[in-house]
Amino acid sequence: MFPLLASFHLSAGSQTGVLQQTVVLERQYSTIYSVLNQISNQTGYYFVYSTEILDSDKKVRLRTGDMPLIAWLNKIIDDPQVDYYIIDNHILVYRPEGNVAAIQEDDGYPEKRELIIRGRILDENSRTPLPFATVGIKDRATGIITNSDGVFTLKLSEDDINSQIFVSHIGFLTQSIPVKLFQNDKVDILLETDYISIQEVMIRYYDPVVIVNAAREKIVDNYSDEPVYLLNFYREGVMRSNRFINYSEALFQIYKSPYTRKFERDQVRLLQSRTISNIDQTDTLILKIRAGIRSSLELDFVKNIPDFINKEFLHEYDFTKADIVSRDGARAYAIAFKQKSNITQPLYTGILYIDMESLAFLGADFEVHPKYINKARDKFITRQNRSYRASVEKAAYTVSYKYFDGNYHLNHVRADLHLRYRRRYQIFGNNYHVFVEMATSRIDTNDVNRFDRGDALRTDRVFIDGNHSYDPDFWSNYSIIAPEDHITQAISLIESKIESIISIKSE
Image (cartoon, rainbow, N blue to C red; front, top):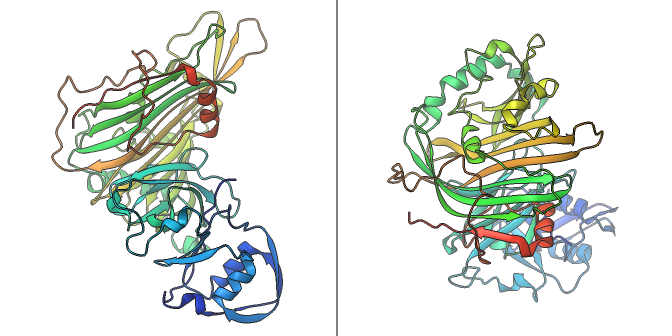
């Protein structure tokens, strides 16, 4: 069973004697989850526990009464083997014989221990995974993105032991959790929807075109006018129906040129990479991702202005007020756009997220208009076997930026391309899913210089065409985008075919 870290937002209170604080509950037959939410109205702490210890969906029958919190917890949980430990404003429910017992009163961890934070981010209401949530240490340039299953892996230094992990996602309240509570176990973190009041929406009338124009003009103020180094985890893959064909991962150091220098190209230096291939003689079609790295860099739409925010082409789009949403505790405009009905060329449709205060672009979710996508087929398929017919089913993108050290920086990009191939004169064919993804795990603003030509990687590189050797301890201390379950399962089935290359260069 996947361990669960459930959090209940509580009012402020004193840590001293919190377990002896009197709590009043009414007569009821409710889930443990519901009862703990009621307790949250009377105490000042988050409850943290694992599903291996506590089944939050289990129902308990209670009578009206007032008792100390510890008495209620013992009655509700009904397990003499559990104990409670207070860390900051959290109450940890644990079994002393488990990993949690390793917590020490002084600093919480043995000295010189690597900190590995693993978990999954879920919608508190639906319990569905939240992909592309940001997980990191606030006001630090350290973080990672959850994958499509909502799973993340974040590696920290021992100096981060007393830090707080912040989890954010558009439309949800930001959650903070002490690093000490993770204990190298996989945990689930539930995010609560941040509802925007009708009154707030009504009084914040805005013209979406005016906001888009203003955000574009504010790029010079909101994004760095100095170069920075980005440490990025990159991956790309191809699936044929439900079968994994190839999958590549890499760690890059990126020289990110200033946003004020529109014509200065970004550079990429390869630190480490590997390719996992599952191609055999029965494959009648092999897809390779060419220029996936370049495409990822070009998805930085603040640097590479697309037509849906380009002043010269805004007249080709309709913009509407989609919503007002939350992002990292602040409010953001969610502006929907799509090409005008009289335009039949393949343009984009999607949503822009713009911070209400700074007018910075926070990100976008968009795709090529489904009605006209096959008119753009030649942009996606550069060469095609004459024995096959190809159609593009969908081309979707997501991009986000994060704030650090006074500016917004590229945080995450993802591109998904869905294709269908079939032989000529045949009815049935195969579905292919091609994706590229890149996430920033660290930002460095000190002593940033362009790479020497010999150190820079060609951004049109095809990872599968390389010389390979295997290393079992591959990613070392680096944070990565955790592979989704279906990729992990596919890799485990072809373990003997795993190949990798390592190219570590000094920084």
